[in-house]
Image (cartoon, rainbow, N blue to C red; front, side, top):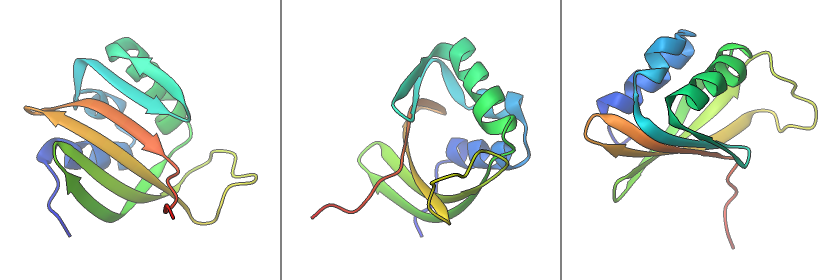
Length: 117
């Protein structure tokens, strides 16, 4: 498996420890998170997203795959938590597309990706 940048590892570890401040510290101040086709721009919006969607739902990530594509790190993770699982696949595996600049995450896209043709 490809080794992740330390900032992405810190993101995953902080999330699994339900450490909102630790997760937020991995992002650039003007970062973008897109989850479920919703954009969260900047530290304040990302903090609200982390508090509600990750910490509030006690989400944990079990990394099952890692790929690097230019400046993007793609992390496939099996999720668990207290979120509403109605109609979701079991297990729920999402792809996290991290763009890293320096030692900060500048973009994170969270997608329920499916193989193409």
